[in-house]
Length: 270
Image (tube, rainbow, N blue to C red; front, side, top):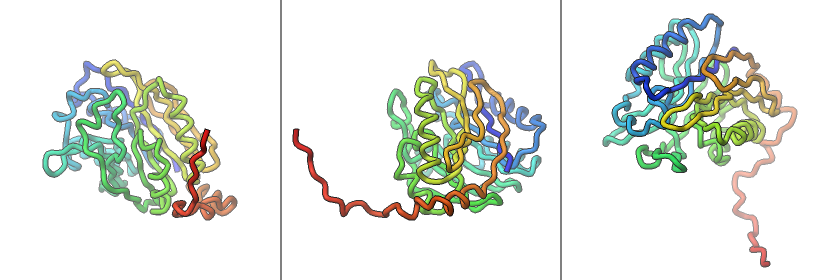
């Protein structure tokens, strides 16, 4: 399985419409074969451009997804669109990730459950998602989380119980916490015995510098690929069967309890 991680910058002077066309050209011109192309979180609007969220919101069949559906069909590959600002019923907005199959069909979508409030307006502007989904693909069951979701292991446990073997993580992770990015992408791969495919934003927008270093981590914690901190496409190859082999060889997931509420809790007195 060949995976292309497309790190995208969202500079302040560039309009979302211009960025969409620029990224379309970048992906169309990418000469290497890929089975899956992955983009970052909210790359079209730029994560920190909070004042533009409302104007940039679109439906799942809006311009961003349509452009990437054409790329998927033309290249006969899966495309993970990163995420978009999605219109929902009642005028609410969500941060929604979309996976498109080689025939241009939406095969998976996920709205970010853990919206981010630290030095961010995401919690004020966006409604949290309410469900997870795992899609059957040619390369096995694929799920998704988005950026901040990396910090919540319980969500990942639910994904694994739903059958996920590969988890795609579009992100806009700041450079200031790059060490956490590396730590958490590796930890979630190891503690859930999944392949983590994580694509991060780069560049500076609205005063925030994003860290890049998109990466692919296998269930043993081996980093199969890691990009740098500039815009571009990183191609890597992985064997999806590594998940089944790892789980058979080291069956830790079978020892995980579904419910730990039986434990006796004692307060330690000082």
